Length: 118
Image (cartoon, rainbow, N blue to C red; front, side, top):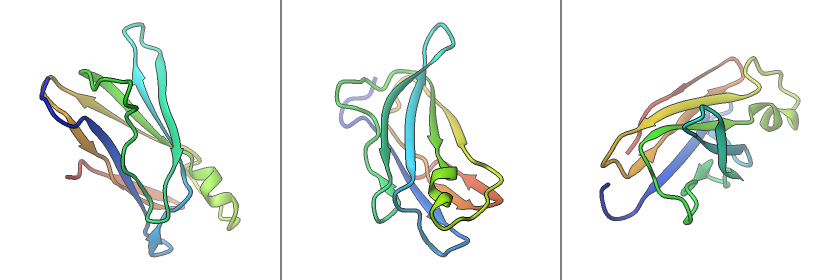
């Protein structure tokens, strides 16, 4: 495994409203050998739509499958916007030697896109 900072972060932008998606609940999970998903952390995006570190200090960034779950139903509940995707789950693979992942989400009520950022 690569030395240095181990990080999983995200940045959520609400492209329909033209601003960061602040206060959006986000959960990080890792798939165990049994196939079950284990929750590693749960937080909310800050005023800039960011979560700068989702991987807890007590966890190592091991190879395997990880998943970010974005609770968009909660985010859209306050402005009373109907959304097609109440939860968006983004599953990604960590390989040996990888140490940093930034997974941005571009969001609208009826669609989304994601990619590996830097």
